[in-house]
Image: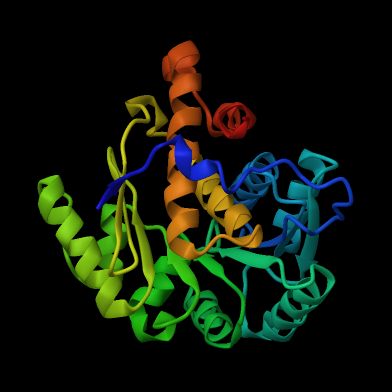
Length: 288
């Protein structure tokens, strides 16, 4: 068991070589959003950029994609024709994932789940996509609810699941909300081992396990209990996977970055903290 410190970032954020090219530090796909929710994938994408990924492509239903594209010239959003993700979009998703993998020379990862909704069509499409995709994936938010219906689909894949305590229950059937940290740690390690995946359980102390190792990330602030901070964390995780980190290292490092950025902002803004404020503080944490 390790308590994660800033030392984990030293091997990730080294000076870039003079001959570096775009995509050497990754291309991230963010699949999310629906007719009602557009902010979640945008926050993940912005957090990924601030965490050092070279490019982010967002794939979202048309209304969400159009709104996201208006947020910032940094955000490229591909529109899907419909109000939410369905199996009709699978060929496009797989094609765009393979294209990203090719153009980035394999330095690709995916974040999926934020703002997607829980319609049966969407949940089925998520499961089918995850069964086919061959790149590292961060499974967050509504995608966790989909995986909870068929958790075997993630077994042995290069995936990272980022639940809070209720989503952990949806994924595993185990209630850990009221358990002391020692028992939460045991539960996360056991379920990561059973599901053959990496789990980042979000909380006052974040717990990361791949079934073998366990990482504890302390710190952060109670002022981070706001909408969007989990989306930011998913984006940081995705950026680190795209940069070449394994799921366990990516989860531990992303949790550390997210919590420390939250600490900086909370000290200044307290109740006024928002996810976008936290995202803007990320470069200070990863700077050496």
